[in-house]
Amino acid sequence: MIIKSAEFVTSVANENKLQDFGLPEFAFVGRSNVGKSSLINALTNRKKLAKASSTPGRTRLINFFKINNAFMLVDLPGYGYALASKAEQSKWQALIGTYLEHSTRLQRVFVLVDIRHEPSEKDKQMLEYLYYYNKPFNVIATKADKIPRGQVDKQLTIIANALSIGKDNIIPTSTESKQGTDKILQIMESLIQI
Ligand SMILES: Nc1nc2c(ncn2[C@@H]2O[C@H](COP(=O)(O)OP(=O)(O)OP(=O)(O)O)[C@@H](O)[C@H]2O)c(=O)[nH]1
Ligand SMILES: [Mg+2]
Image (cartoon, rainbow, N blue to C red):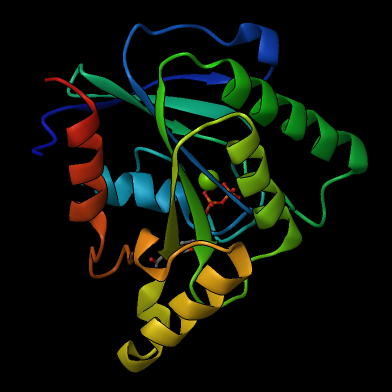
């Protein structure tokens, strides 16, 4: 798929401000700092479309991006940001939860985990939540450039076992080499009619 246009549409801080854009949506979830915003930039070939940051907890809002006037990418706030207060964390949870439960246009959820680490309890809960609400998802293992090539398979096995999913269902990605971005774009293309 060729990305002809990519534009920021809006940020939503509160669940009652969520709106229907009339286009199919793809959401990116995962713990803070896992690489959601960076992946959105890599997929769209835009360096600063989504604000990426080495400071965890950067994205505290749901950010909506309109691509090719045909579909929306949805950058969800990262969960499990240790320095956030309990009140802030539960606010984000409510925001993510409301979005995931009620978005009628949601085609696929991309759940990001860091390829270097075993998924956390929060990641496992996210998958249980997606199963419960019947939301189709793919798991993406980010930052593949940070480990030697020879270790990729081993890490994918660790992640697959922890999440009780098939290893082949996990897409390794790197924003440095663009590994995996084609595959994600293909999945999106297969789910929308352009
Ligand atoms: N080497 C490498 N660094 C990456 C990759 N993806 C993300 N990063 C870095 O990881 C850090 C966090 O990336 P973000 O995209 O801001 O993470 P996020 O998931 O949006 O974080 P929050 O908004 O806090 O939830 C940044 O310093 C990125 O440059 C990757 O594939 N390879
Ligand atoms: Mg972000």
